[in-house]
Image (cartoon, rainbow, N blue to C red; front, side):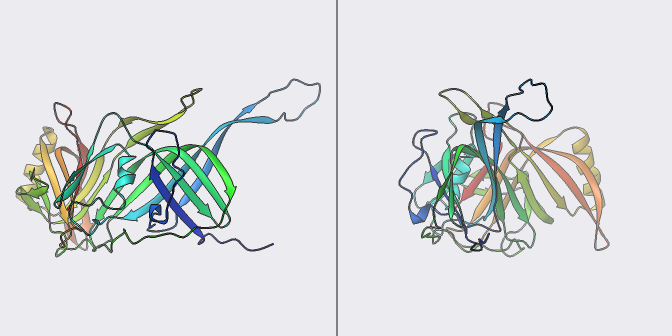
Length: 321
């Protein structure tokens, strides 16, 4: 028997023009550059017959539906050209974000509350191709200090099929080389920042260990005859940051937290036009501040809750410019 290797894997993704209807025209450019090995599982929903017989033992289960769960990471960097969507933009669109393109300037991804897009995955694993349509997911943004910035995705898709196929030709040229999150490449977290024309500025600068966000989409596999779907039924955006504060600032910080005072929060990364990334949350609640030891120095670790605007404005916007 020939050996089969996990390294002979590839992921391809395409948004669906009609939800749940896979596009048959995949090309090499639909491939995703993975930042680490992907995880792919199929979960069947079998129905037991539960037959009654005068002897002990199982009765078989009958296959009903099944879903694929696909987890992977991509590097978070712009497309290389301002106003051109990054290669991972289509993945965010299937995680409940709307894409807005400002020609030759920037692309913005803002969370939405309805009309979610979906897509089809082709997952290749050394001789076998799996197809999962109607895929939707959730994401985690990792902009930790002195690390490569990444987006960790989890997708669910339904009607998974397995076919014999080799890994096709793939074109990963749309994925750019990222910059590590450093002082020179990123700068400080901005507390009380503003977002104007895609630029995050102003506010109080905080020396930090970087910032992370979890989009927190709640996914459900809705098993309807003639309308099977993966639904995004709710969302709770959370995050975490660890910052350096003076003694006076820590007292003020804890007072603000005790009174549930809200603020905005911004973070910029990248120094090259076309490769810059910004993450902006207009209404953030800080919770659970804890002092931690960082090489003998005191830092404050704080959990974050991103809130939508009072009229439903998006609680998080990602800018590529």
